[in-house]
Length: 166
Image (cartoon, rainbow, N blue to C red; front, top):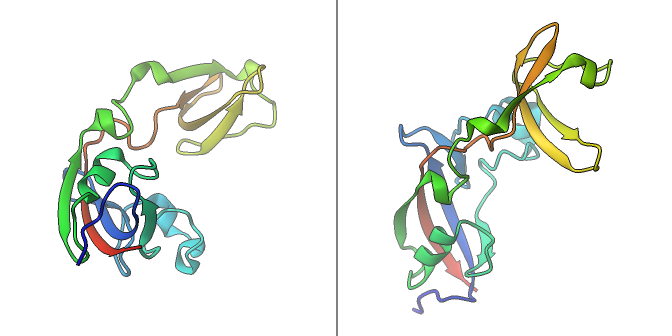
């Protein structure tokens, strides 16, 4: 049986966990994950986009379709083989950056914007550049946004299994 090499199209299963063991993403059927998106009716139909319970992932090793450390770990693996890979925060979604948290006066925002803490929004600037944010504080005078990736600052542990090559 051949081992995987760079350029091979492979099928993998994985489970991603935080340092405390909480699952945040998995391709395994029946795996419960902590994503808030999984608490919707869309999750039951497989359309929520949370990544949990979606079935195996297909990728081509070396094309940057997944974390580089995982793609590198797949090289020389045989079907059925499993590995655990820890991806440090700085190589995953970066360190948490306080400078990506900012407050905007309500007078600078549309009058019909009535966000609540936890809402995920996309802000568009004057240059039409968009920025994904989470609302972290709402007052009568201002709204505070966090544009860090939700997994920023987290070391991620992935348990991967090579299902098949080709």
